[in-house]
Image 1 (cartoon, rainbow, N blue to C red):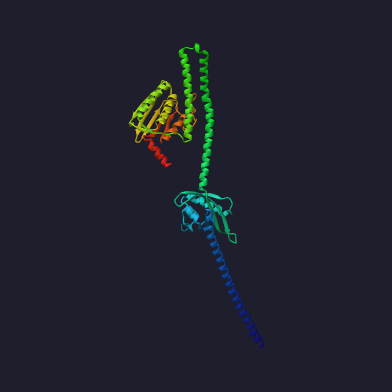
Image 2 (cartoon, rainbow, N blue to C red; image 1 turned 90 degrees about the horizontal axis):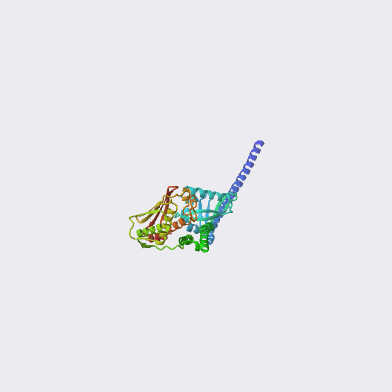
Length: 425
């Protein structure tokens, strides 16, 4: 009996101890729950404070610097943005919040590019700005230079990515203008070098001719017949005229390059103008060539710059004679098509190689098959500029050994055409 009483007493003791431990566990659990709730409240308060700080930072501080500010989550979704972002991209916060940034770009190539840029931002902690073309809501482009910082959690995972962008569109445009100006300066320097080289040759030969004729007249005039003296004087005169033409060409192209070429369209009888021009060229060239002139449907009056048109047609007709066999025929046709006048000047001369046709209107360029036929390479570049001033077009059809056909199309009323062109610019 004594052993049995002892066992009961022990069980009662153990039971009391167990109940006490349960009470202690309940107290510990209650305390743990209380501590956990405090931790949750603290975390929520920290997150709320962080969000508030970010909103304040995004919405106010960087607006002073006119910077675009965007808060991304680690997956590239837009969480917040500042007013400058809205004003620049024309997207409101409500339209972009919760959307991946690449969803704002409609073209697949652009989507992939923006994904790649965001991937670079995630894998780098900052440094060199990333520049990209940002598409606004209305489809226009702005060049934005982006920098970023990464906000990390205690375990080093990404919490937020804060992107700041600066609109550098005007700077990019200015850089493009500077590059264009530098290229233009380089081109002009090359033209000057080419001119010095060509002019030295083009002036040296006629100057030599003038000197020789002058010496003959100075030392042997009393021994020369009247006809021989007249020939020497004519040679000097023709040579001076050639040099004057070269100088005039240089002056004309200089004006065209600097945009100071005068354009003065007037009304005149185009058919009568062309017939007189043909007669003058036939007389001045003194060649055995025949210019076959045909006029179709040309109105009584046309409005163009008579002086510039005279230079255009004189150059093309003179070239047709110069690069054709002796005694050849040059076809010169003028016809009216709708509101345009088309001039065609066709010869059966040496023709222009295909590779030279691409550069035909470049300053100082001459075809490789011209041989010793004199020229500077200025004429067609000047013609092209004068046609452009009329708002017209010029094209060429040519085959080596078969001849060349130049087609110039100019509006009947060039004054109206130029006004329209300037208003579009």
